[in-house]
Image (cartoon, rainbow, N blue to C red; front, side, top):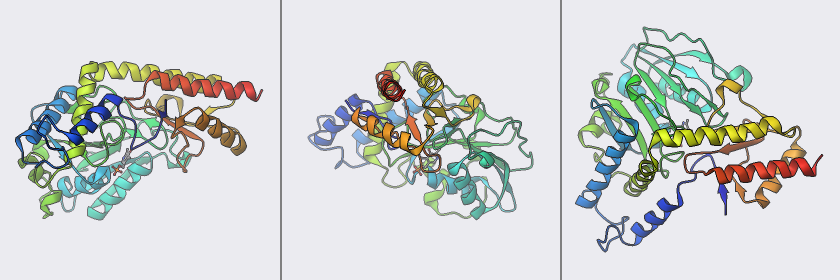
Length: 355
Ligand SMILES: *Cc1c(COP(=O)(O)O)cnc(C)c1O
């Protein structure tokens, strides 16, 4: 059995792969593949509706929010957010907690004025800045809830009264959130929600059309909301697989249940990192992510040796991002405790063999 710790695209439940592969051959006993049906067909309309309903149920999305399935990844949202809600002459406040956060801020700076209110770049983004003050005269505040590369996570929304936009690409559906605290939530699917190709946007309806900018319709949330994610041909297969994955999550008991599993998985792995003298966590203790666990060893030789052992044990995708080095175990919803234990076994084996 392969244990897939890849950061994204990443693991999804085996059942989801099986059902999805069946639908590629014959979708809903239509005699047609999911890959060839019209996005305007009744069968596919049902899929989009069910996907939206599942998002609303699983996250308790309030009525006055639109749920959109777009394309272009989280990266497109970096640009779409300011185009839609940053008025001419206005400014936006950004919290800089890593590469994705800073890319989001750079895109916004192409549209209007950006103020970086705090940054943890001084320590290679190994912590989340605390005690920040969000300027009340900004049009909105943007932050990244889980820093996929550095293994830090922001569990509580920073205090502010202005509209808040959050990039939840790598921790959406991993823990209970209060959607009403946010004005826009966006997430590329390929970390914890589905395959690459679809991007979830949850936007408060009162924010639609507030920038008064002339923007291309394809980048306008209002156009997508009005067309119910069918403004143009949507990512049919990616939405379908996302829907299957959300069905799987619901059948498991929903976000409350998976959150408890995620807490246990993360704690189990961090406990071993803290116990085993050969490994060291890189993120500040209080900011440790439950989704991406980053750790290093004392030397590059040790890291190369452990990587080799890991490959032999079918532990896939644990090499760290080049900007942190060492290792990163992405332990998304679909990754079981069995895989965590397989990684821990390898860490202990390395310890035994190198005493
Ligand atoms: C992966 C990732 C992105 C980039 O997503 P794309 O879908 O490739 O554009 C942005 N933000 C976060 C937090 C990510 O983990």
